[in-house]
Length: 122
Image (tube, rainbow, N blue to C red):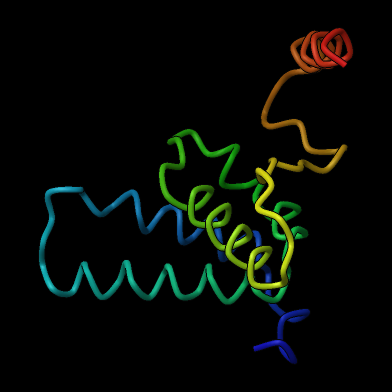
């Protein structure tokens, strides 16, 4: 997978994974659903292992989706924490890193307000 990673649209893969997970209800217990969810977790796991912290650069599409993500972000955080502990690092909290040009669907006025609030807290 590592040799082909640059040919993949990781943001589209994460977004397609998110949309697939939206079709699966928590009450669904069909074997095919369980296998499908395990496959999506494996894909996310492999992408995170290759991209490490830079996986957040590709998360914007999922974060901007009209339906909130309840799985992928949590999976990424867990995988990154696991990778960090395997490398002998301390288990520090993982923070969401968003590219500067990403607006999350906010209009310019709301984006400016958000930037001002962030600046006040720093």
